[in-house]
Amino acid sequence: MSIAFLNDAFLPLEEARISPLDRGFLFADGIYEVAAVLDGKLVDSASHLARLERSTAAIGIALPLTLARIEDVQKELVKRNNVSEGLVYLQITRGADKSRDFLAPAQLTPTLFLFVQDRPVIDVPAARAGIAVATVPDLRWQRRDIKSVGLLAQVMAKQAAQEAGAQEAWMVEDGFVTEGASSTAFILTDEGIITRAYDQSVLAGCTGTALMALAAERGTQIVRRAFTVAEAQAAREAFITSASTFCQAVVRIDGQPVGDGVPGPVAMRLRDLYIDFARQTAV
Image (cartoon, rainbow, N blue to C red; front, side, top):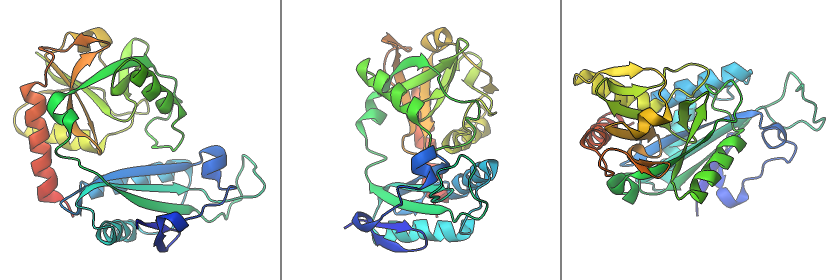
């Protein structure tokens, strides 16, 4: 039986109940985070918690628990569910309000919900074979740096990618790739590793940030700029990062092979580096 956490209480996931008047349900008025679990420990926890704090502050939701307490809850969930590899999902909304007014009452109690997923993160087929990407128009709002639960555009992008025979969507705005539907996008050229600068147009990826630091420490040039779909298709390698995928090679973009059409050595090496980092720093 899976154990979840809802509003300061551990309980069976099947018994967790959230009000239909919750603003997360009615307005997508909330924030979420996802952290990987490796060897029964949280990966890059401080980075994810810092991003949670930034996102909730940006929309004016006060955290109902301290960051330290939230981390303790995550650890306890991992322990109670006996998860060795997987993910911890956290969502916080502004709370339930029967008025259903766009302007929420000032003293609402936030809803905090966490659950775990027991699933492999290391030995997965996509890490060995690489993934295909399909490009789609970026239909999202302008504050993509906020990790909002409003994910309809990403859902639509994932559906379009699946229909095109791809495993991820890269969203495109004004001719340039912004990011993946649930990942950060990278290419490797003679310039080095190229990825967008973190600003309001994209989410600051925790995994990508850590991985680029590891690459820079080993002398790889990191170029923070936008790139086009054509640049990506002509690149030596391409890859994505996220908490759930770590680092995965992109071997096709819109049906066109990237490089030799197989996972490249740099992406594979970066994945190994990140896994080592994750194991050494997990809490």
